[in-house]
Amino acid sequence: MTASGVSEPGLIVRNLSKSFKGTHGHEVFSDLSFELGKGGRLAVLGRNGQGKSTLIKILGGVLPQTEGSIQWNMKPSWPIGFGGGFQGSLTGIDNIRFITRIYGMHFNDVFDRVENFAELGRAMQQPIKHYSSGMRARLAFGLSLAIEFDCYLIDELVSVGDARFQRKCQEELFERRAGRAFMMASHDMNIIAAHCTRAIIVEGGRAKLFDDIEEGIDVYTWLRAA
Image (cartoon, rainbow, N blue to C red; front, side, top):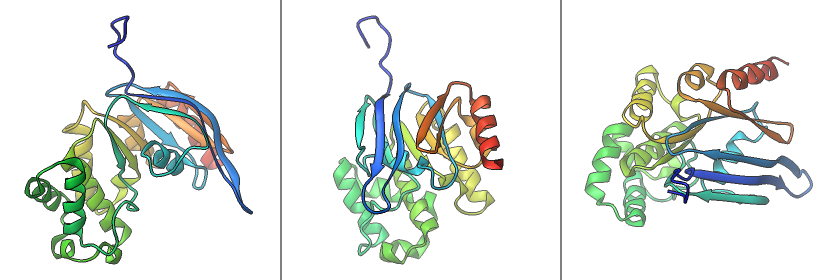
C-alpha cells in the first residue's frame, strides 16, 4: 500500500524504448509509459514484425530495453509463447527439474501438473531440441501454470494445439486464474475483446496505449486492413 492507502500498480513502465543496432538496425518503439494493476488485463496488438513480441520479451527479462525503466511489484511469468528459455540438449523432464530448483519447488508436484496439462507423453523423455514450437509452448505454459505467477505474459500461446487444447488453455488462464494479471499479444480479437480491458498498439516505431479496449480493437482492425 502507498501512503495514501491505494495499492501500488503491479507493473510500472516509464519511457520504454527499444532499438536494434547494426546494418539492419531500427527502432522498434520509443517512449512507452503505462501501468498495469494487480489483476489488470492488457492486450498488446500489432501487425507482424512491429514489435509486440519484443515488448513481451523485454517485460519478461528475455531482452534488454534500450532506454526507460520497468518496475515489477508482482511476480511475472516468463513469456509463455517463447521457448528460448529451455536447454535444448536436456529432455523435457530435465528442464522441469532444473526450473523447479531455480524456483525452490518440489519436482514431483511440478512434474505431475506439467505432464497432465501439456499432454506430451513420451516426448517428455526426449531432448527439447527435437520439439516442435507447439510442443515447446505446451511445456512452457504447463510450467507457468504449475509454478503460479501474479502476472502472465502471453505471446499467442492460446492458438497452440487443437480446439480442445485451446479451450483447456483458456479455462486454466482466464477462468481458474481470474484474479491474476496478464499481458497478451494476440491476433485473435475475439479473445482480446472477451478478456482484456485495455490495449497497447505497436506500429511504425511507436506504441500507443488505449484505455478503451473497443477503441484499441477498432484502430488495430483498421491498421490490419490498410
